[in-house]
Length: 249
Image 1 (cartoon, one colour):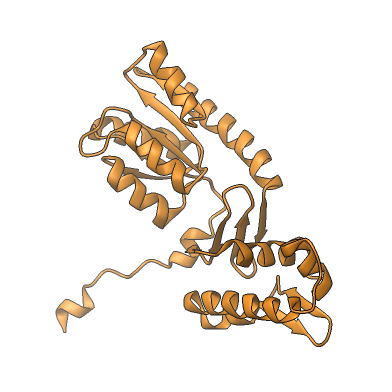
Image 2 (cartoon, rainbow, N blue to C red):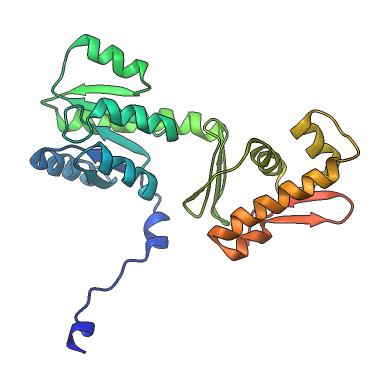
Protein backbone atom coordinates (compact mmCIF):
# COMPACT_ATOMS: atom_id res chain seq x y z
CA UNK A 1 0.00 0.00 0.00
CA UNK A 2 2.82 2.42 0.93
CA UNK A 3 4.54 1.75 -2.39
CA UNK A 4 1.38 2.62 -4.26
CA UNK A 5 0.89 5.83 -2.31
CA UNK A 6 4.43 7.05 -3.01
CA UNK A 7 4.33 6.49 -6.75
CA UNK A 8 4.92 9.55 -8.92
CA UNK A 9 1.87 11.02 -10.62
CA UNK A 10 1.86 10.42 -14.38
CA UNK A 11 2.05 13.27 -16.90
CA UNK A 12 -0.91 14.44 -18.95
CA UNK A 13 0.62 14.00 -22.42
CA UNK A 14 -2.37 15.63 -24.14
CA UNK A 15 -1.54 18.79 -22.22
CA UNK A 16 2.17 18.40 -22.96
CA UNK A 17 1.79 17.97 -26.71
CA UNK A 18 -0.77 20.76 -27.01
CA UNK A 19 1.78 23.34 -25.87
CA UNK A 20 2.11 26.27 -28.27
CA UNK A 21 5.84 26.61 -27.56
CA UNK A 22 8.21 25.31 -30.20
CA UNK A 23 9.85 22.01 -29.32
CA UNK A 24 13.60 21.62 -29.93
CA UNK A 25 15.47 18.30 -29.97
CA UNK A 26 19.15 18.68 -29.01
CA UNK A 27 21.24 15.76 -30.32
CA UNK A 28 24.63 15.90 -28.60
CA UNK A 29 26.75 13.17 -26.99
CA UNK A 30 28.67 15.53 -24.69
CA UNK A 31 26.46 15.83 -21.62
CA UNK A 32 27.83 19.21 -20.51
CA UNK A 33 27.22 20.73 -23.94
CA UNK A 34 23.76 19.20 -24.15
CA UNK A 35 22.87 20.56 -20.71
CA UNK A 36 24.14 24.04 -21.64
CA UNK A 37 22.17 24.09 -24.90
CA UNK A 38 19.02 22.95 -23.15
CA UNK A 39 19.35 25.73 -20.57
CA UNK A 40 19.94 28.35 -23.27
CA UNK A 41 16.90 27.24 -25.27
CA UNK A 42 14.65 26.82 -22.24
CA UNK A 43 15.42 30.37 -21.08
CA UNK A 44 14.57 31.56 -24.60
CA UNK A 45 11.09 30.09 -24.20
CA UNK A 46 11.43 26.76 -26.01
CA UNK A 47 10.45 23.29 -24.84
CA UNK A 48 13.56 21.11 -25.08
CA UNK A 49 14.47 17.43 -25.08
CA UNK A 50 17.76 15.73 -25.88
CA UNK A 51 19.33 12.60 -27.36
CA UNK A 52 22.85 11.20 -27.02
CA UNK A 53 23.15 9.80 -30.54
CA UNK A 54 21.37 9.43 -33.86
CA UNK A 55 19.45 6.27 -32.99
CA UNK A 56 17.96 7.84 -29.90
CA UNK A 57 17.26 11.02 -31.86
CA UNK A 58 15.24 9.22 -34.54
CA UNK A 59 13.12 7.52 -31.88
CA UNK A 60 12.43 10.85 -30.20
CA UNK A 61 11.55 12.49 -33.52
CA UNK A 62 8.80 9.90 -33.98
CA UNK A 63 7.56 10.15 -30.41
CA UNK A 64 7.78 13.88 -29.68
CA UNK A 65 7.54 15.45 -33.19
CA UNK A 66 10.00 18.32 -32.59
CA UNK A 67 9.75 21.58 -34.52
CA UNK A 68 13.53 21.69 -35.00
CA UNK A 69 16.56 19.43 -34.47
CA UNK A 70 19.89 20.84 -33.27
CA UNK A 71 22.37 18.17 -34.36
CA UNK A 72 26.02 17.38 -33.69
CA UNK A 73 27.95 15.50 -36.39
CA UNK A 74 30.47 13.52 -34.35
CA UNK A 75 28.61 11.03 -32.18
CA UNK A 76 28.86 7.33 -31.27
CA UNK A 77 26.52 4.56 -32.55
CA UNK A 78 25.00 6.73 -35.29
CA UNK A 79 26.76 9.95 -36.27
CA UNK A 80 25.17 13.13 -37.55
CA UNK A 81 25.67 12.30 -41.23
CA UNK A 82 23.73 9.05 -40.99
CA UNK A 83 21.13 10.71 -38.80
CA UNK A 84 20.46 13.38 -41.44
CA UNK A 85 20.00 10.75 -44.14
CA UNK A 86 17.56 8.70 -42.04
CA UNK A 87 15.68 11.78 -40.86
CA UNK A 88 15.16 13.13 -44.38
CA UNK A 89 13.59 9.83 -45.42
CA UNK A 90 10.73 10.27 -42.95
CA UNK A 91 10.48 13.96 -42.09
CA UNK A 92 11.16 17.51 -43.28
CA UNK A 93 11.80 18.73 -39.72
CA UNK A 94 14.27 21.65 -39.86
CA UNK A 95 17.84 20.73 -38.87
CA UNK A 96 20.63 23.00 -37.64
CA UNK A 97 24.10 21.46 -37.43
CA UNK A 98 26.16 22.49 -34.40
CA UNK A 99 29.60 20.92 -34.60
CA UNK A 100 33.33 21.43 -34.06
CA UNK A 101 33.93 20.57 -37.74
CA UNK A 102 34.47 23.82 -39.64
CA UNK A 103 35.66 22.42 -42.98
CA UNK A 104 33.87 24.19 -45.85
CA UNK A 105 33.32 20.88 -47.63
CA UNK A 106 31.38 19.62 -44.62
CA UNK A 107 29.18 22.72 -44.72
CA UNK A 108 28.40 22.23 -48.42
CA UNK A 109 27.71 18.51 -47.95
CA UNK A 110 25.30 19.20 -45.09
CA UNK A 111 23.30 21.68 -47.15
CA UNK A 112 23.20 19.20 -50.03
CA UNK A 113 21.68 16.65 -47.62
CA UNK A 114 18.87 18.99 -46.64
CA UNK A 115 20.24 20.79 -43.56
CA UNK A 116 18.76 24.25 -42.89
CA UNK A 117 21.71 25.93 -41.14
CA UNK A 118 25.26 25.19 -39.95
CA UNK A 119 27.03 26.48 -36.82
CA UNK A 120 30.45 25.70 -35.38
CA UNK A 121 31.66 25.30 -31.81
CA UNK A 122 32.45 27.15 -29.62
CA UNK A 123 29.12 28.93 -29.90
CA UNK A 124 27.65 32.15 -28.56
CA UNK A 125 24.34 31.58 -26.81
CA UNK A 126 22.67 34.62 -28.40
CA UNK A 127 23.55 33.37 -31.87
CA UNK A 128 22.14 29.91 -31.13
CA UNK A 129 18.79 31.41 -30.14
CA UNK A 130 18.65 33.79 -33.11
CA UNK A 131 19.50 31.08 -35.63
CA UNK A 132 16.93 28.72 -34.16
CA UNK A 133 14.27 31.42 -34.33
CA UNK A 134 15.22 32.35 -37.90
CA UNK A 135 15.00 28.74 -39.14
CA UNK A 136 11.67 28.25 -37.36
CA UNK A 137 10.27 31.38 -39.02
CA UNK A 138 11.32 30.16 -42.48
CA UNK A 139 10.00 26.69 -41.74
CA UNK A 140 6.59 27.95 -40.62
CA UNK A 141 6.10 30.13 -43.69
CA UNK A 142 6.87 27.18 -45.96
CA UNK A 143 5.08 24.56 -43.88
CA UNK A 144 1.87 26.55 -43.50
CA UNK A 145 1.41 26.60 -47.28
CA UNK A 146 2.06 22.85 -47.50
CA UNK A 147 -0.02 21.61 -44.59
CA UNK A 148 -3.61 21.21 -43.52
CA UNK A 149 -4.00 21.17 -39.75
CA UNK A 150 -7.30 20.64 -37.94
CA UNK A 151 -6.39 20.95 -34.23
CA UNK A 152 -9.89 20.28 -32.89
CA UNK A 153 -9.84 16.74 -34.28
CA UNK A 154 -6.07 16.25 -34.05
CA UNK A 155 -5.51 15.76 -37.79
CA UNK A 156 -2.48 17.06 -39.72
CA UNK A 157 -1.74 16.49 -43.41
CA UNK A 158 1.60 17.44 -44.96
CA UNK A 159 1.38 17.79 -48.74
CA UNK A 160 5.12 17.89 -49.34
CA UNK A 161 6.06 14.81 -47.32
CA UNK A 162 2.65 13.10 -47.75
CA UNK A 163 2.69 12.50 -44.01
CA UNK A 164 -0.61 12.14 -42.15
CA UNK A 165 -0.86 12.27 -38.37
CA UNK A 166 -3.92 11.72 -36.22
CA UNK A 167 -3.49 12.69 -32.56
CA UNK A 168 0.29 12.52 -33.02
CA UNK A 169 0.15 8.99 -34.46
CA UNK A 170 1.51 8.58 -37.97
CA UNK A 171 -0.88 6.90 -40.41
CA UNK A 172 0.46 5.13 -43.49
CA UNK A 173 -1.73 5.73 -46.54
CA UNK A 174 -1.59 4.53 -50.12
CA UNK A 175 -1.39 7.12 -52.89
CA UNK A 176 -5.11 6.94 -53.66
CA UNK A 177 -6.11 7.06 -49.98
CA UNK A 178 -3.92 10.13 -49.49
CA UNK A 179 -5.41 11.80 -52.55
CA UNK A 180 -8.97 11.30 -51.29
CA UNK A 181 -8.12 12.60 -47.82
CA UNK A 182 -6.16 15.58 -49.16
CA UNK A 183 -9.01 16.70 -51.39
CA UNK A 184 -11.51 16.34 -48.57
CA UNK A 185 -9.19 18.50 -46.44
CA UNK A 186 -8.90 21.15 -49.17
CA UNK A 187 -12.68 21.57 -49.25
CA UNK A 188 -13.42 20.97 -45.55
CA UNK A 189 -15.89 21.34 -44.00
CA UNK A 190 -17.82 21.57 -47.29
CA UNK A 191 -19.17 18.55 -49.17
CA UNK A 192 -16.94 17.14 -51.89
CA UNK A 193 -19.12 15.55 -54.57
CA UNK A 194 -18.37 12.13 -56.02
CA UNK A 195 -17.56 13.65 -59.41
CA UNK A 196 -15.07 16.07 -57.82
CA UNK A 197 -13.32 13.27 -55.93
CA UNK A 198 -13.14 11.15 -59.07
CA UNK A 199 -11.63 13.98 -61.10
CA UNK A 200 -9.08 14.73 -58.36
CA UNK A 201 -8.02 11.10 -57.82
CA UNK A 202 -8.21 9.60 -61.33
CA UNK A 203 -8.41 12.67 -63.56
CA UNK A 204 -11.84 11.68 -64.91
CA UNK A 205 -15.30 10.56 -63.85
CA UNK A 206 -16.43 7.03 -64.76
CA UNK A 207 -19.25 4.63 -63.81
CA UNK A 208 -17.26 2.60 -61.27
CA UNK A 209 -15.82 5.67 -59.52
CA UNK A 210 -18.43 5.86 -56.76
CA UNK A 211 -17.77 2.29 -55.59
CA UNK A 212 -14.01 2.83 -55.64
CA UNK A 213 -14.39 6.04 -53.64
CA UNK A 214 -16.56 4.26 -51.08
CA UNK A 215 -13.91 1.57 -50.68
CA UNK A 216 -11.11 4.12 -50.26
CA UNK A 217 -13.16 5.98 -47.64
CA UNK A 218 -13.81 2.68 -45.87
CA UNK A 219 -10.03 2.05 -45.73
CA UNK A 220 -9.38 5.57 -44.42
CA UNK A 221 -11.98 5.12 -41.68
CA UNK A 222 -10.44 1.80 -40.65
CA UNK A 223 -7.00 3.37 -40.34
CA UNK A 224 -8.40 6.31 -38.35
CA UNK A 225 -10.21 3.88 -36.04
CA UNK A 226 -6.95 2.08 -35.26
CA UNK A 227 -5.77 5.30 -33.61
CA UNK A 228 -9.09 6.32 -32.08
CA UNK A 229 -12.38 4.41 -32.58
CA UNK A 230 -14.34 7.67 -32.63
CA UNK A 231 -12.13 9.04 -35.43
CA UNK A 232 -13.87 6.68 -37.82
CA UNK A 233 -16.57 9.37 -37.98
CA UNK A 234 -14.25 12.09 -39.27
CA UNK A 235 -15.34 11.33 -42.84
CA UNK A 236 -19.09 11.71 -43.21
CA UNK A 237 -21.16 10.44 -46.13
CA UNK A 238 -23.77 12.87 -47.47
CA UNK A 239 -26.38 10.71 -49.16
CA UNK A 240 -26.22 10.70 -52.98
CA UNK A 241 -23.81 13.64 -52.99
CA UNK A 242 -20.38 12.69 -51.66
CA UNK A 243 -18.31 13.10 -48.51
CA UNK A 244 -17.08 15.77 -46.17
CA UNK A 245 -14.32 15.91 -43.58
CA UNK A 246 -15.35 16.78 -40.03
CA UNK A 247 -12.99 19.49 -38.70
CA UNK A 248 -14.54 20.26 -35.31
CA UNK A 249 -16.07 18.20 -32.53
